[in-house]
Image 1 (spheres, rainbow, N blue to C red):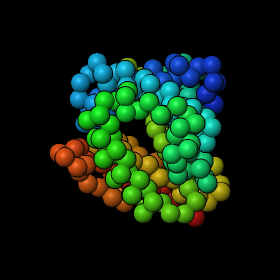
Image 2 (image 1 turned 135 degrees about the vertical axis):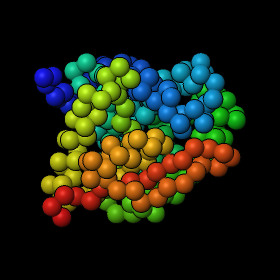
Image 3 (image 1 turned 120 degrees about the vertical axis):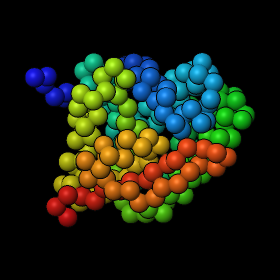
Image 4 (image 1 turned 90 degrees about the vertical axis):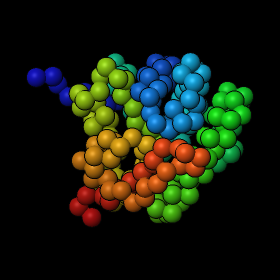
Length: 206
C-alpha cells in the first residue's frame, strides 16, 4: 500500500517546478480552455501565470507541495484574500494583456468579474481562500490533493474559520464535497463560457 504523501511548504527555489506542475494540471481545465483555446499558447500562458500566482501565494498566503512537487496547493491567508491591483503588479502580472493576447485577456477578465463578485458575496467574513489546487495528471487519484488540503483545513477548524474556493471542473465538486465544502453558487461564464461553482466549507466542530 502506498504511503500517503506528506505536504510541506514550497521552497522558493522549487517554484519553477511547481509552476510547471500546475500548468500541466490545469492544461485541460475548462476555464483555461475557455480563456486560451489554442493549446500551445495556453501552455506558455499557464506557465507564466502560475509563476505569478506562486509569488502571490508565497507573499500573501501559504503554498504547500510534496517532496516530488507533483501537486501544489496555493492558499491565501485570512485578511489577505482580496486580490488588489497593487498586489498583482508586485507579483509580476503587469504584462498579462500581452501574454494572453487581447481576446484571451478579455475572457480572463470576464471570468475574474464573476469570481470576484461571488467571492465577495459568499465569503464576506474572515476566511481561508483556496486559490489553486493542482496535481500533475500522472499522479492524480493517489491522495495527493487530499493531503495538500489537510494542513489548512485543520488550522481553519482550530481557528473556527470557513474556507472558500471556485472550480470549473464538475468532478471537483464531488471531491471538495468529501472535504466538507458545499456549493453556494453555480452558473455559466459569459459568451458561451463553461460552468463555474463556488464552494464554502464551514469549520468542523463549529
